[in-house]
Image (cartoon, rainbow, N blue to C red; front, side, top):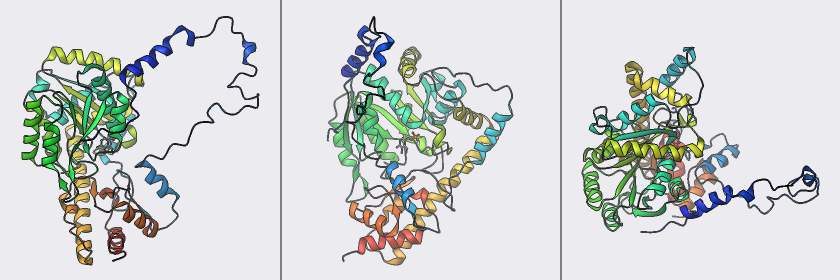
Length: 452
Ligand SMILES: Cc1ncc(COP(=O)(O)O)c(C=O)c1O
């Protein structure tokens, strides 16, 4: 297990920074008149350098930077398989029909206003989101053991959960899978947690490193937090089987490890909302405590609306309401309260039987297209006789395939074929279409046979 290098300010340091801000000396100095503005260090008329001139240029985000490079490429055959956003067969972004309908309903409703939401967000949205992930008949919901707060998509939900744990939970260590979505380390480190990793992926089998996972969680300190991808693990596309989940659950509960689920792809992996929530529901069914961060970016295509939720399932209703009161204190100084529009779209869809049904069909169509792309790419590589066993392409699930291509092969494919992906060889299957499969196949074939 490895400790991640992180720029984490400790919670103590963060508090001391806050205390310094609140000290009287940082407020206006008595007798400080307007005349002192002339030639002050930040005024523009003293010929001095910028007070920011020491700042070094930060590197592009490893995932979003792929799109920046892609946008600069003028080749007509360029292909962006870096970003995790769904594209149609025509390579276009998709706004779901149900989303358009819900927006129309919202626009037509003259009684709707734009006042602030409460700190915890839209009440309907929160209730419906908890039901969606935990199941409509979840005893935890019926027993008022779940608090749900609307947050800024999956990222914001993870961050609020991380901040809450750093402030109120006795164990400040979180274990994240190796590898994982690139933002996890930074989110939790900056929230004030100490980030360590557990083995997850085995490059030799291109599957789950189940033994390593059990060993690493088995030797984690009691009470440690464990980040689990609810389904469609990013970037590997490798999920535990139901039986493996059960073993993970038993191990974690026996050691008192606290599960924190990241559910960014519910319905997007298998095409079924219930199947993709199975892992979370197994942990809730045993009566233990669980955190879940939900995102509606992928499964409703609401990427830029930033709609998500954090649910914390507790032992009893009394603890739950106290937890919620503290979540408000985390959120209030961060962004005060969440935006109204995206959550209203989600609530409109989730509470209307017809819209909900239509959503499940559209969601399944997206998931099915991705699964078809897996099959087409696999068939094309086989037909071409590309060396290697490519069966992991059809075994993996969700938006991404972890191809096993190395950094040099990725760089070659970008340079020679104008195909863009993250340097770890992850490709977004959602960015692929029947039209572009042959181009990708040619590129992979050339990359793996180069120099042979
Ligand atoms: C595993 C995982 N978690 C969380 C997110 C957060 O996405 P968003 O903040 O857009 O909901 C993503 C997005 O790619 C992801 O892949």
